[in-house]
Image: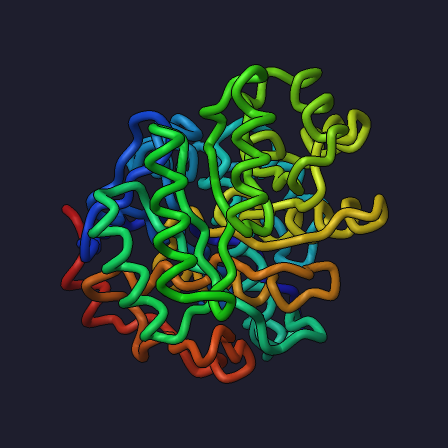
Amino acid sequence: MSVPTVARVEGLVYRLPLTSALAWGAHSALSAAEHVLVQVTLSDGTVGVAEATPRPTIYGETPASVLGILAHLETGLTGVAITDEAGLNRVRNSVVNNHTARGALDMALHDARARAAGSSLFGTLMGPNTRVRVSFILGIASPDDMLDEARRVVQAGVRCLKVKVGREHERDLRVIRALRAEFGPDVLLYADSNETLSPESAPAALDAMREAGLLYVEEPLPARQLRARAALHAQGRLPVVADDSCFTPADLDRELDFDTFDVLNVKTARNGFTDGLTMLRRAAAHGKRGMVGSQASTGLGTLHAALLSTQAEVTEPCELSFVLKLQDDLLNAPIEFRDGWLDVAALSGHALDPAKVARYRVG
């Protein structure tokens, strides 16, 4: 039997409204998930799918640019055997940046490869930790709105909150203290500064976060300030999560060389499975902890992030509950959380609902 080859690469834009806007960093905000459904069709008719989550303020991508880069790469991918992972990766990596387009393409190729072999991603990628602790991204809003949203997601089964901070330090601390008073030790908290602190303000800010009981802080300083980040990490005030500073495996090598972090946040939305696995294993070999993050992924992206979260190198709560911020989803069944955990093995029957794909398609 001949090995199937890539026949077609396509993207379909869809838009899902959020229950409320997600705000982060100094000025970024998201009011809807306008993403791209990436589809790889093989010569035998097999179709692999994934979700691309363009973020103009983070990666410089838009839905239109994702469609453009997929069309650009389709020529080189057409005719390549789905089992030729090295060849497929050469084409996929023949362009730089375009992180969510290349990440989604990698996952769609993995999905097509598993399906062509008569299996599934659950059969080929599931790691040893089939239940994963989850966190929820709590965006910047009024303190009352943040507390109300936290109550809602805790009621839905989440027991860890990633609190977006960085626009007003004292206000951030008041929100964190209110969350701690509301939930006590039953709900874990950590902060995401999105590069908003300065070398001068960061030491006191991290001390205050530690005293407020936070687990760690993500990207307290601008990624470009490498030496300052290394110096801050060396002070050991609060464990640091690397995210914006570690977009790629090459970025990770630099950060390991300078020892700037304690926990690596890998995102399937930008790294796919190939680079995501490589980065988690490389970080673990250097004694770093691992988590899997969300780029505000909807259901399909959450399934893929959840599979990576089952790997042995993942030690921390993972951002798998953004679906709770969606008014609707493309999947045929909801993703549910219980007492802070997600049973990833129980999601193997979740799939795209064609009627919902048609309903939320843009253009």
